[in-house]
Length: 288
Image (cartoon, rainbow, N blue to C red; front, side, top):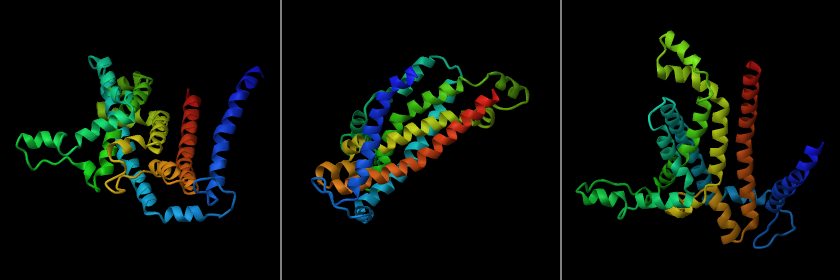
């Protein structure tokens, strides 16, 4: 009882700060609020206008691209790095530090680094062209068709280490006797990881996916630093759309509608994922 009473202030704060703000955003999205909040009711007009806005549809499409480029690549690279370190390699602590170092940087610093790398004149392209390879091109941030992929690559560089740490911690919890038994049966090391180890890491992958999804939804500063959403609107993302309309264009109603759509999208993805993770953990605990 005392524990519940101690947690009561935190619960009240969560209800007021989080649930209350969500309900307030939903209410504002149903009004014609511009610079200031309004009390009129316009129904779903803001949502209709949102999906008729080209900038928002581009932002939604870019979010879909980043789901595959960022989340997919980070999961694969993080797994490969974790398996590499799990081989009891020499200087393991150095490799862990190197792989995790990018995560210690903010997205602003990461964006500045990769903005320089992709700079057509002062970045890698300028260096390589100066060496005589005049056909070399690495100007992704100034080309509409590749700008979002440049941002995705920078995000992969920063986020892979975190996933590596999560997967590595799960790998270290796998019973080594399984490898001894698999080796006696003539199972190769790659087959052992694919068929025996990785299927046991469901909760770890679910945790990594949740963290990556949250980071993806919050993607704003790295886009602002690298491309400012350009060229044109080619690298626009939902978070930047919301911030721009909330503070720059003084359209609170449209920004609230966009935030509600983004919240519902994330919830529809994360809720089944969290439920699946809890079921997997329950089955594993029951097996033990």
